[in-house]
Length: 57
Image 1 (cartoon, one colour):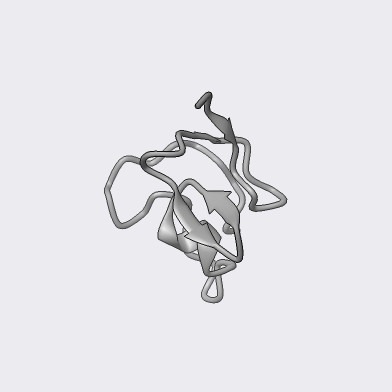
Image 2 (image 1 turned 120 degrees about the horizontal axis):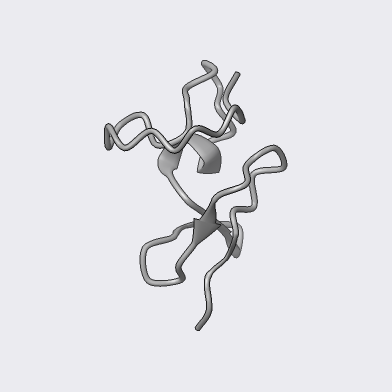
């Protein structure tokens, strides 16, 4: 399957189905996006691979 845009409304990352974090049948690029950034965590913060998205702020 082809990559799709992360389901987080403010995120511009593309997510591959084989690496997606899936919640409620929606694909997210990382755990921060999937959990809705409750503490304003940056996108991909846990992996250290900051993508430049501002979706958590």
